[in-house]
Image 1 (cartoon, rainbow, N blue to C red):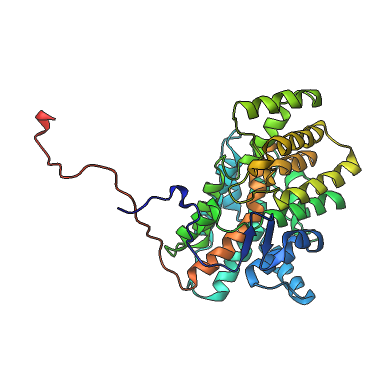
Image 2: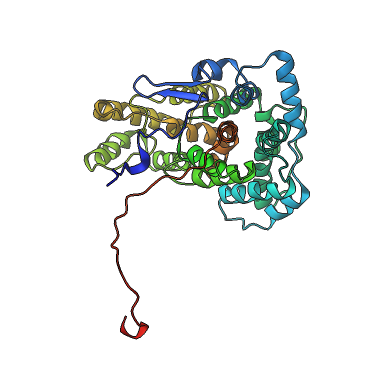
Length: 376
């Protein structure tokens, strides 16, 4: 009998040069570049180019790539009309999943192996996912969807379309860095979902829609919403010790702490914490940040020996909240970034593709026969 590996933990399912993780040392690299180096020194457009093309761009390459993205930001009027029909109380991730899939009807793929066809689809998806999210957010609040602005960067344009105002340089740079941090993370649940769908030779709109569906789960993309909610539920800084110690004693999960891969503090959490401090230096700290730092200190003392430290979700919600972004848009922001990684894996999968067809461990009974319905 085949041995079952729950969750396929530790089972390689593909070769990839896109990113790698050292969970013991807390290292994440994109194409061999450390995430800290990229987040501090590169724009999200540069890092998107790196993941898709395999190397950092020259100035001319970056300018051309940025112009191409801007040219693909607008979405069809029919998509906007569809978004307007969704219930205002529905989660934005449901709207994103449906609208990404619908984009495939407006832009049917030609020859899947044609590099120009691939590139056009990649550009359109990276550029339009922010537009889809922002349009839905405004429409559900009774506002008109805003057209993208070509004079703004990828991150700044998204924030403008979402809130109706051009963000400050600090806020725009913070969002840009957040996009870089979430772009890629090896074979996580949504990326694996995307690669399985890619292996059927489905078009990239179906691939990204499926990956978005995987990202809706509270154990994946939805964790950032729950982490902020959990931290916000602690009444005050004075209550942190009792609340968190009680959770630890009862062996309850503390959202935002622990990771399947990292056994030390997530490198992205370090960067997000620094971004939070930059934001707070400009506009003042929030009580939840002080609570989060105390939670981290208690967890390090009592759970550090188990390799349980803050992950990317622990501070990302605090940063987004400080920018005035509603909590149910946190996970869609994750998708704004991760769509790049999904598409890099789509490219890799269809190059020398073999459809995924794993086996199973059968636990049922066999040899039954069908009797008369009267005697069942």
